[in-house]
Image (cartoon, rainbow, N blue to C red; front, side, top):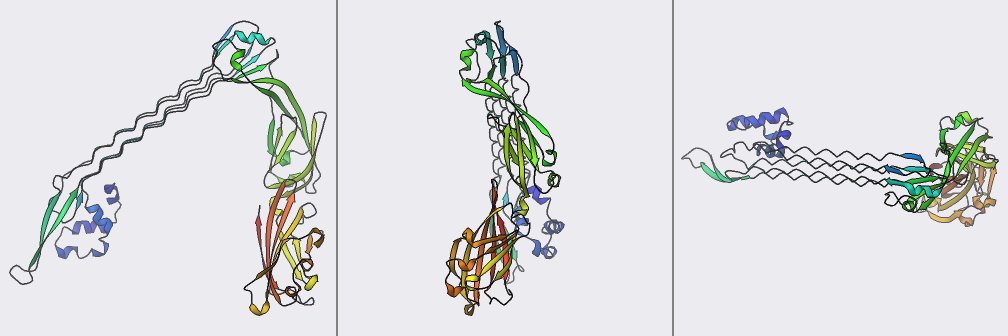
Length: 481
């Protein structure tokens, strides 16, 4: 450890280490770089022991084979057991330090080398799972002739940690060094004796034992009352939205019922999970999207869409978080259509901005514009916090005069422009007159289908006379989900 640090010292510090053994006149070049770190390194001798290598992890046990069988009353013996995980390897012992030779009569304290730490034991491998068994039958009683062993593998044992090695001991723990200044026989000649010590090296840490691997799971049973194998299913499809147009997609799913008591169906002594599946029916549904949004579907590029067929034979369609979609679903005769009425990129949902702050008194209003021009599709609700302060006192000490939702009847929308009739709210008349400084915070909740987001718009300025253009005002916008 310390020797590694020593190798990284600047060359100037190495030079000072050398000149420290020269007469006083040779060491005056170095006082500025004789740092605490230098003395810390200089006090150590020999070489610390290295840490032992960690043990390797044990390999996981392989899972048992999955099998499909058709029964006809004949006896069948199956071993679908998972294999045990391997044990983890032990960590190596720490390496012995090189104690070297303890320097004699040096003018500083010294530390003996530390022992090496032991390596950690490797984790045991996990046990393999038992294999799954699917049985096709005509007579359920024939399953009593099937003996199956689908046990789980045991986890491997963790390796033991390696022992750390002992640190070096000092052969001399205390000594005195006499230092004299001045000329012998003269009045300024003085000698002092200082005590220095050697500290034994620390013992290396023992490595920790590795954890045992986990046990695998028992195999599972599935039963199908049929002589024909089940077809594969495709319950989920994920693809870019641009690939949905003018195409039908076939979704299919094998529906199962969950039961308990698997062992009672099989030959005595069978080892398998108690929960099992019983095939109920096959579900198939065609799907197509109908695009009625004004923007072409190709403009949404690689936005991901996921189709999923549920056990209720319904097709769930999930769009990317970055795309807001409103539409309706129609299903008949194993065919589902989803009509997209509106599709809006998420970034265009919260692009509201203050357009104008106008008039005074009961005619005071705040006009907000939708820069993305999507307000014909998006539902918008407003909440306001109205604070006011007489202009004689400047923009400080605001008092909240109104905080709450703006009733729908006080919000007018003209295409993509909203007018908020603030003067019609329950706000005292004296703070609605010209010259009053106001601080207004509007929170707009925008929603489409199941998605919603909030945008905060702040405006600050003075109420002007109706004939005066809006000046000396500022606003900021903040978006949130």
